[in-house]
Length: 228
Image (cartoon, rainbow, N blue to C red; front, side):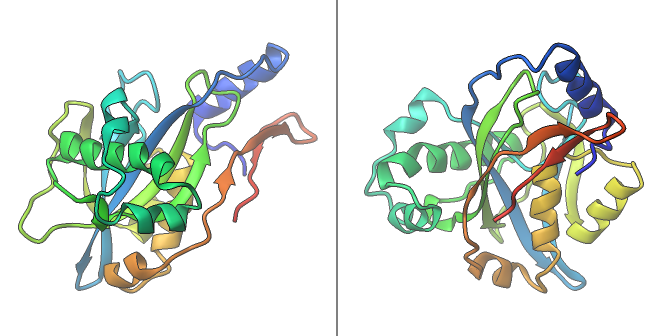
């Protein structure tokens, strides 16, 4: 996968120039694809991070963030947690902080309240070694509650809203929006479904993906990704 984004490419080239220094330890995190149905097809809620953010500035992302200490306090008997853990392939105790972080971050970042039982597993990605800030991120999905409205509530984004996956992918291809590989991968998956309900009913195989940075014969940095 070539690095089309200029910022990613610059950091990758700097990492090679520095002799591939030891990677920092990734922090646990969770992100959520909020989806809803429209006449043309399912839409997903995205946010554009402000340019001053230390991680992924100006990137289009799903609501989410790192796991906080309080997220480890989620009761392992919380409805829906055992089923989510089984699909993710982890213990209920291990799934609890990620599920708690997902629920908390969605409310903090776009004012939407979802329950752990609403969460569905989609993927598990780790930030490549060349990035100075790395995250071990569970990608989850949830249906948009009919009686709520998604909006920017955290100050961490300066744009975004609801969009079809195909539209976002086309805009990214034209360079109109910036996205990281996990978001592109997740949107490509959503684009294969005709409804949000079908997407949420899907139970894909979850595998930990850690893209590896390599150099093409011409020296161009490329990400090699073994997808599940």
